[in-house]
Image (cartoon, rainbow, N blue to C red; front, side, top):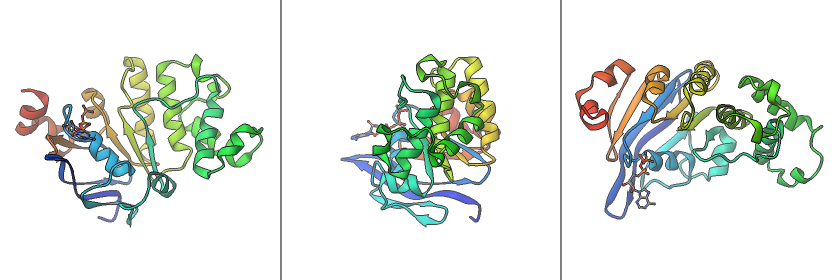
Length: 247
Ligand SMILES: Nc1ncnc2c1ncn2[C@@H]1O[C@H](COP(=O)(O)OP(=O)(O)OP(=O)(O)O)[C@@H](O)[C@H]1O
């Protein structure tokens, strides 16, 4: 598939006798949001771990922009352009938005010791950080300590940290978790624009957000992919309704 940025082929991962992901294939194409949904214990985290490199698949392949990255480390994948945000926030509360995003850029560049030196004039850190902050419409908050942000703004900073690394593909793990309707609507709007620059694999429990945002949806149940399709197809799919939506 020519416009596939991220391709998973036949991924298998077992924990002892439990097959947590069985023969999982999917692709993420340029310009799209592809949502991965499934009930608790379906295998989503296990699949994400195999994409990010935290877990090694027993069989199968992960490709980023055509390159086989299955054997690469987490850091090597990040440097190749696999961006992600985390379920648990890794922001430093006492530091400004700008400084947090700069630290993310610095980590990727491998200059971790510069954190302890004055870095505010280092254009290689400041410029990508400011661009990502602008992309998430947080310019007016750039100098604000993260501790003073709303929950929704923190989420925007987390996405900005991932974006500052100029990813080819972005993995967002439950970005809507804990957001109220306003924060969720704002992030939805931002992601709808962002997908044109970087395709997004979205793991999300908020089904309203999924149906609003996703160009395609893949449904994982008990380690198996039971359906792929656009929103209307997934809503109407009897297997999904039975296994996931509880109908
Ligand atoms: N390290 C592990 N060792 C043993 N079993 C594991 C391990 N990690 C996950 N599992 C099991 O694999 C299955 C899939 O779990 P996983 O966390 O991937 O699901 P999930 O879809 O992410 O669930 P949730 O939405 O609750 O986070 C579960 O039965 C889980 O108990």
